[in-house]
Length: 220
Image (cartoon, rainbow, N blue to C red; front, side, top):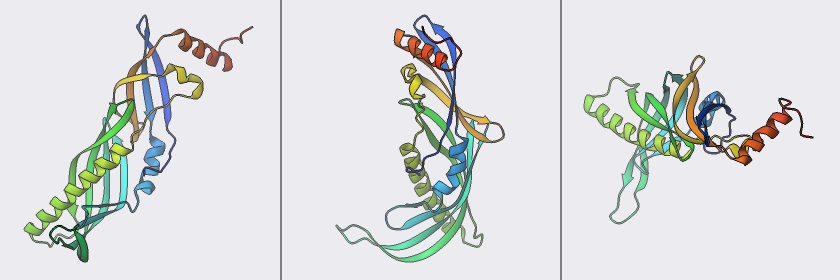
């Protein structure tokens, strides 16, 4: 997933704020990333290092108001583990395979001018309903711990950092806050708020863009 590139759309709206700063409202349309997610995460595996390994089967994400709803399935393999004193644990033969479905949600936060996502409210369901309750409890406990730890690690390493076009690079918006929004029917977006410093360089850059777009007459 870290090596997967997908375009996104950034829409900026400028507002009055102070004599030296312009308010900016930005909308990130992440529908292309959303569409690429199932293939990017296919066959991704998580492990605790020895006893348990999880392999994703399917993943689907849709926006639901101010949260992202994520559902899918994965297989969890368990193994015997040789834990010799003073040695790195060594995986032995497989002991079982379990199929599970999951449902979780994610929300966006803004940090260091990037958008990060965090998981919450993970629900797991075992496909095999014939296991005794004590076994189910242990299986779900192991799966939950690995899934949340690995999922949050992936999300921390794959933030979305909005970039303005090169011709507007001098605007350099500073984002203060943001959150997930739904675009259309289930499309994932992020609304950001912040501001832009009003300097001579910034004003000149904007005027040049307006001239290049034909909004203003060319300089003489």
